[in-house]
Amino acid sequence: MTWFSEDELRRQAGDVSFARGAKYLESVETLDDVAGGVTAVVSGTDRYTVRLRNVDGELVGECSCPHAADGFFCKHCVAVGLLVLEGVADGGAADIRGYVETLDRDELIELLVGHANEDPVLFRKLSLKAGRGDLDALRRHVEGTLRLRGFVGFQGTVAYTEKVREVLATVRELMDGPLLCRVVELVVEALDFVEDSFGALGSEVQGALALYAEACADTPPEPKELAEWLLRLDLDGSGRVDVNIADFTAGLGFEGLAVFRAGVEERWRLDDGEDPYRSRKLQRLREGFAAMRNWKA
Image (cartoon, rainbow, N blue to C red; front, side, top):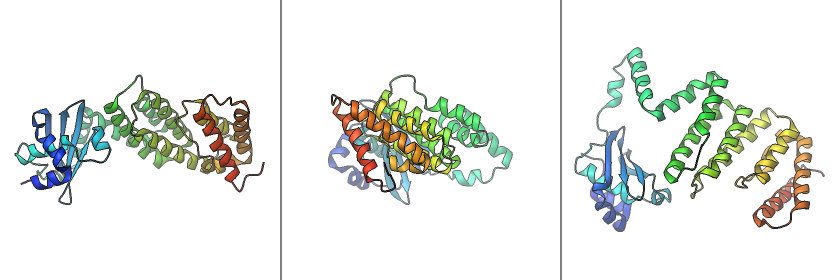
């Protein structure tokens, strides 16, 4: 017996998406049981990854399609749900935990390593955790994980954003300034090669930048170099990153703040107004300085 009914599926999706999903059953390419639910691939305009989960007896649907990214229970989730109700999958009903608890340490190691060798996502997660004890190896792994070599579409962007989240979860534990700096650089470079129409990757960049600001406060880098790096990041690149200078006051110190402000004022003086967006960014940075009570020109 599944943890949801057809009425619940219709309520979550609404009548329109439910009706569309009912016509999508043959578009479900794969359907597999996973812990606490099912996962599937559904073909449409693109190939979308769907997961239905049992969260305390409630149906939760996730899909990589644009409609679901806006927070809706989409037709792809409906199609998968209807197949589950038909008995094509049982929603991860097997007692996996009970089985794993019967294994000894060596059996667990062999099982986990064996699956990691076949599953790139699991391998990446374990490699990141293992790298915490070897910073040089972790840097190489992060470099290979986050560097893009060409344009990726919506699906590729969703997968890449998840990689960024996994990297940041590990790097957050270490709070290594140079590593965080490199993560920011790599993801900012990637923004030029992704279809980030919903801004998810952009949000991860801002989160990584905030983490780097914390690391700089704990262990300040050379102030002039930090100031020039922030100027390049905000004003001299693609323009898709906004630096909150107040976050970096502790890392920059008075010397770094002076260099940063001088750089902003020089660019303001030379600004010809042909790029209104850049002009607004310059104005924002100038206003940011004006609002900083601890700054004295």
